[in-house]
Image 1: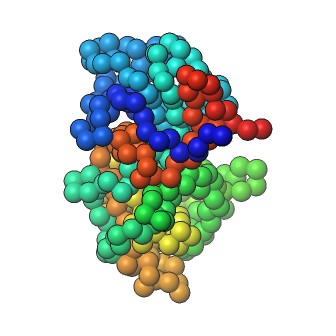
Image 2 (image 1 turned 120 degrees about the vertical axis):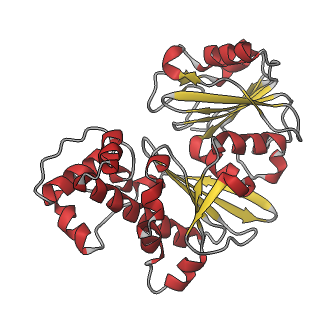
Length: 346
């Protein structure tokens, strides 16, 4: 019987963060040195992940990897793993054959984000509001990007345990007077409003349409970038949209903090975050995060952070590749070896 946790990887280990638009790679040479970044690639420029990896290694004149740990934006459900928002289908057995690897582990993209949390410090993060992280306490990461990713990092028995999930699809409802004015105009998907429908790059235009309708103003924003640009120019609909976005994100982040008692901190990442950082820091996000009566005092003690690291997912994968024994990352059904594939049980 194969263990659900690897004993160790053969170096060099290729780590990769594969999204719908870009794939970023790095090489972990041993258990001590920092990972060596490789050139990023656009998924649209290559037919599959193996071609992209070969091109990235060749451009960097880097040594050939012996193992690979890859995070993908899509469910890991078998020997063929389609990306949710790109044409690639990741095939670990093909990667082993073409790249001459000994083993390949495929993880969820927010599992990789969670793996990074214990090592983030200094300029990697920027704290918003009060609170102090307790050593060894649970952490949570939430990321508005194309969708809304979420994962917990639990510490137990001297081991960090990443817990990915579909938290971005929890319900989101009105709380403030302004919310109740706008919510009747929010489009529902199959009768409900999920957090990802509004708290994502694709959700921002939906939220802006609701704000514009409630305020009886004519706006036709089709992309999140148009809203952030209009807000920088003082457009009232765009400004209110981003203020509401920040409050709703704070509320959802607070819900998750209570769910796992994340006294190690709640971390905000994702492609949208860097464009709306000022709105996350102006007080609305943190006020909504703490407004959890009867536990407002507890919430005030839990810190919230913006992740400033350029690629936390790669950092998390590299940490796991160096010292897998420190993390309880279940690889049963998600690890393939040259000796034989470990496939997902049906």
